[in-house]
Amino acid sequence: MKTLAELMAIKEATQQKMTVREDTGDDATRIVVGMATCGIAAGARPVLNAFVDEVAKRNLKGVTVSQTGCIGMCQYEPIVEVIQPGKEKVTYVKMTAEKVAKVVNDHIVNGNPVAEYTVSAIK
Amino acid sequence: MRELSLNILDVAQNSITAGASLITIEVKENTVDKTMLIGIYDNGKGMSEEQVKSVVDPFFTTRTTRKVGMGIPLFKMAAEQTGGGLEIKSELGVGTEVRAYFKTDSVDFTPLGDIASTVQMLITMNTDRDFVYKHIVNEKEFVADTREIKEILGDVPLDTYEVSQWLFEFIKENTEVLYI
Image (cartoon, rainbow over all chains, first blue to last red; front, side, top):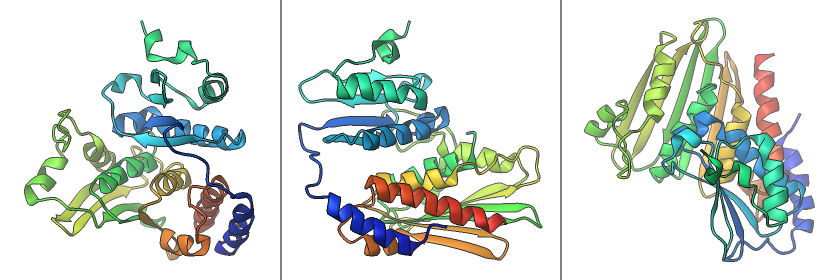
């Protein structure tokens, strides 16, 4: 079972890897997940978790995952915004944990937003 | 909400918005009496008597951009539908305590769900705050305190992926053994 003692070992291992804290300045990509009552009820928690996992798994630098409140389109939650400097903000709607890998791969890594998941695709 | 832990995630956001530096989440279950208490206690800015009365009203919110606040009303409904209830104690400048009581043998009892994921998310998304997670089942107790964890970690941030993963497993495993 996991104990606090184990945390010490994780700390030491992490410190060795952690030379420079990844850049989270102005040129960073921000993935923002709506986590108000509407977002949470619609399933935002696994979506946020999936983004954190995917970003870590790919060891992406300069990408932060954070949360925000309700942006006023509750019926389309879980909503995720991807904000990159110099580019137009992309808003993904009705997100699921399953859709996350594609968004990270196509959009975050390769720069091509997944049009079919965005708010503009809603009829 | 499909899980009570999602209500916890939601209500704890209010504590964060209220500027709390310490948020305590308590889950206290008695498997003999079939009761569960869920408490969210903070040292945020607190509410006036008037505000306390109005937060259970879905058409009250502190937001100015919208007129509907569903967090507390949903939590209250989840408790009341089991035959339990919800109470709020709050004092301006001191903090707020929200307690919800459940009858776990009610057919309308919503399961607690993935509490480890909820607590992990609260902690890693708000590393500037401290959290105490206390889970009690009958006479067995598990407590996780970020102040203690931060002390061990030193300059390694709580939201480091490896730490976050450890945190999830730490909470999950230690909570599960309370039920064995």
